[in-house]
Length: 292
Image 1 (cartoon, rainbow, N blue to C red):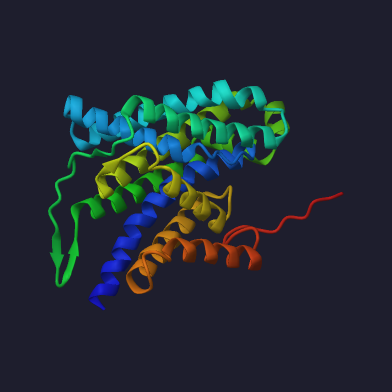
Image 2: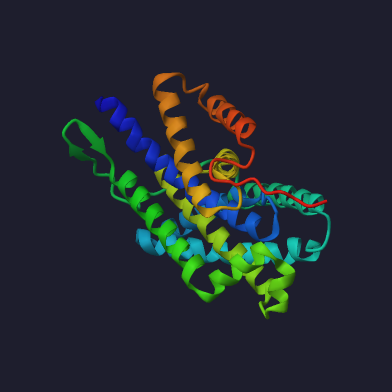
C-alpha cells in the first residue's frame, strides 16, 4: 500500500506537468484549430531560459520561473507573428507543416547555441524530503503539484471572468461573429499564443528541475505526451487537458512501477487508442453534428 500511495503521488507530480503543457496545446487548438507541434520545443527553450537565468544571475526559483515564462511568451508571440499569422487563411495542413518546421528549427537552434551535451539544472528548489509515515514526498514534488494546480485555477478564472478571456471564448466559438462584435481577433490569437508558450515554459522549468537535466531534444516526449493528454481529455477543452494530463501521468507512473518501464509509453499510447475508438472526442468531449 505504501508503494502504491508513493506511485500515486509521483503520478500526480508528473501528470500536473503534462496537464500544464497540455493547456498550451488545447488553448491554441481551441482558438485557431492548429495543433502546435512546436509546443514541446517551446517547453525546452523555457527550460534553457531557466537554466541560463539560474546559472549566470543566480536568481531564486520564483524569479527564474517568471523570467523564463516571460521570455517564452515573447518567443511564442514572435513565432505566431512570423510563421503562423501569414497562414491564417491558408489550409490547415500548411500551418501544421509549418509547426513541424518550427519544431525542428528550435531543436537545431538549441543544438547550435547550447550544444548537444545535457546541462545539469541547479537545485533551485531545496530537495528536502518530507516523511509522512512511511511515505517520502520531495519538496520538488509538492511545489510542482501546488504550482500546477494554482496556475490551472488562475487560467480557468482568467478565461471565465476577464474581458480578454471572454474574447478568447468568443473567437473559439465563432471567429466571424467575434469580428462583427468588435473583438480584435489577431490580438486575441497573439495573446493565446503568449499564454500557451508561458505555460509551456512553466512545464519545462518544473520538468527540468524534477529530472535535473536540460538538453535540446528534451521537449519531444513530454510534448507528445501532453498532446496525447489534450486529445484524451478532449482537445480544445481546458478541463479536458487537465484531466488528460493527470490520467496520463498516473498511467505512466503505475505502469513503470508494476509492469515495465520499457512498456510504459506503449501502454499510455495504447490506452489513448482504446479511448478514441470508444469515444473519439475524448473523455470530456461532446459529439457535434455538422450540417451538409
